[in-house]
Length: 326
Image (tube, rainbow, N blue to C red; front, side):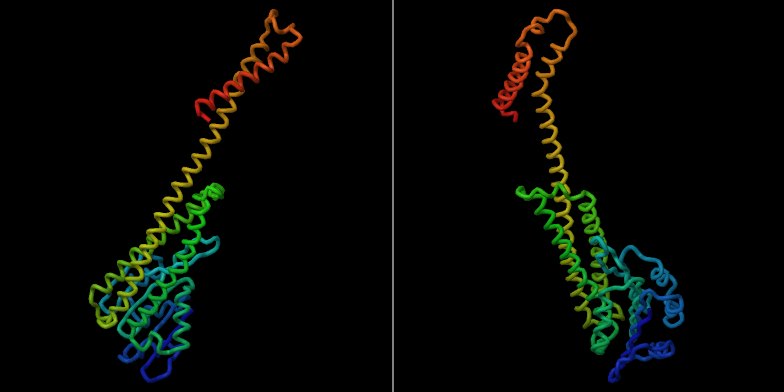
């Protein structure tokens, strides 16, 4: 899907711009063109070369997903690779790549999957034409990146709630439901948090690079907006790092509790084996195939053997309690 917006000062916002109008707008200093390609077909993707003449390596990065955020300076434009996040079925984190071309009077965004933050920016531009468009290409790029970063917060809040629930289940002695949580669920949350950190950390460095290295594509007075995004990413990274540490503690507690449960089970089995050992010894003695065993002919021999078994087992139990072994 190809979505286009063309803004000229003092004129109504234009949508569904033709290719000829795009080419004409690129030579207008007072015009701002935004082209958004969402899951584009081959014909729509051709505009990256035919209209904007982007470098082949940048186009290849768009078509082939890049696993890490980055920024490349191609002299005539900046190429940024960013990542949005989305929680899909079963609350599994899924990163979505967003590629941004930032020129002096145009912004081109490319993404293979729908991105919620992009939907919000497009809707705001449609409803209010000056939103992000009247300040130039850099202000529009800021609006896109700002919404992308803001969308991290709801995902983080969901993980905070899930981790708080895990901690409550595992560390609350009154409930002790943590053992019922499958280890795969706990490890999945930890993997998601680790992936979240791998996304946020390099994006923080990318925004830091933009704010510390002057470029003709970002006006000096607009640098402060990109610093604001950097500050948000810095805080988000701190939150993600804290969640990562919390998950490490939960995993350690899970294994400790599992080990404790196993030790308790082994203790019970050992106690049972120890208490039944005298009875087994006595039964094995009277079960030997000797002709002359005095108690075999005794009328009360059966009850004597049972009493002896009970007495020895009870004596062992009392001894263990006296020694505080149980």
